[in-house]
Length: 147
Image 1: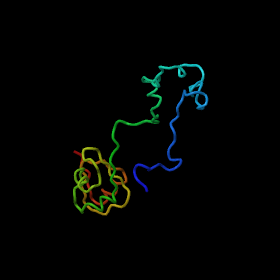
Image 2: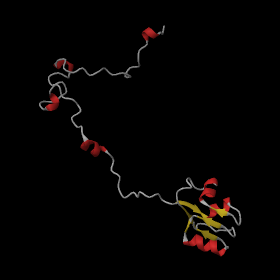
Image 3: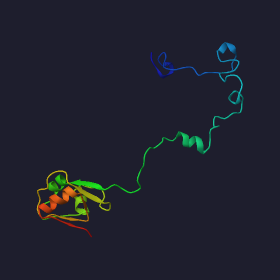
Image 4: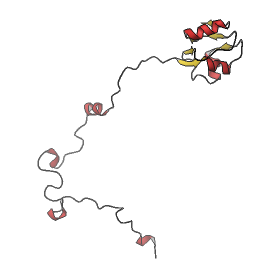
């Protein structure tokens, strides 16, 4: 009958621990898997020989290229403005945040000219605007207001 007292793991599921230094018949006698001479073959040698700053620096992955300290502009396209705003409306970083088009109203926002603007008399306040977006905006009677 099967009970907790006679449970055994499957064959091959467990391995016996390597016991070194128990004579030549064990297969790990004489040098006890430490090799011949040298610091690592002697007793009292810790495995922490490579301490300090240099090994830590050598182990860090290298980051290539240049990373600017300044944040990139958050980008909004004209197609998104068409979808979320009405004619004659005001587009500010706060209204863009409420519409879910940007993540942070305190960071700079740039309107790009991808798509066709269909809304007339829009006011863009405190936004950077690309040349193509500016041309489309002015063609439909819109204004760019910088505070």
